[in-house]
Amino acid sequence: MTMDLGRIGVWQGAAVLTPQLAQEVEELGYGAIWIGGSPGGDLGIVETLLDATDHITVATGIVNVWKDDAATIGAAYQRIEERHPGRFLLGVGIGHPEHTSQYRKPYETLVEYLDQLDQAQVPVDRRALAALGPRVLRLAADRTAGAHPYLTTPEHTREARQLLGEGVLLAPEQKVVLSSDAEQARTIARPVVENPYLHLSNYRRNLLRHGWDEPDLDDGGSDRLIDALALHGDAQTISLGITAHLDAGADHVCIQALGPDPLATHRALAVVLLP
Image (cartoon, rainbow, N blue to C red; front, side, top):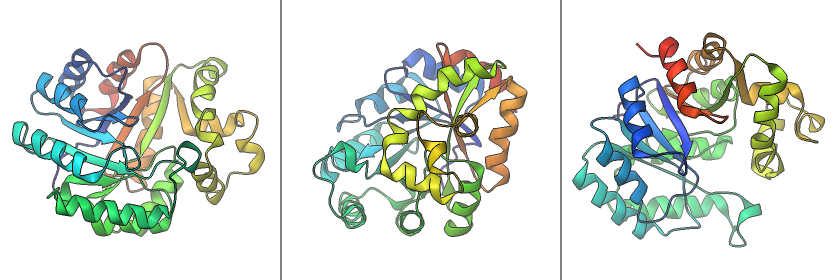
């Protein structure tokens, strides 16, 4: 792992990621900004955020392999690298069968896409792979800087570290709600977790593999599941859940702040999580 992402980053959807937010996140001391969703193939938002900041790393979480071909993404990578050398991590992933009629042979498609990124001269250590199950985690270790799991718990992080081995990036995403009112926090978090994630087969399989039951995943998700996938409490309480990923083997945790004011959450967490 050659890129320095720091221990804590920010994961937000593209609609929230303004240049002003990026500037403040950098000033707060976060190590990376992860662009959620599937940004367009020209990766213009990456360049916008890098133009607005001085040193923070920007990563995609993720480019969907069904949406844009590797040659297009490779050309965008080269453009960004020339303008902002060493500050962009290309996260790619296979997406979900529920969201594309093209979804065929997902593992083989990922391998082929990585082969094409090789041809486009995107360095292995400058790309990461969305990975949940053992086979794709091993592929991430073999063909990229590492893995960017989404919608997971420290139990998954511990297993992923064992599969990846040492020296391979492990950067899980973790949702948080800055509220000590459990019911209020669940009201904010449950719709985000349920739609679409609890209706997507790959996330369901992964959660079931890690000890959750079907009733936990149905009807909007059990309180216990929602509390695990979207940590809530004051900043100190949430920091314990973030640290649990680091203690389980994560190199870097991407915090997705839910609620009306994500930046307020990032400000509060920076006080307790960042040096």
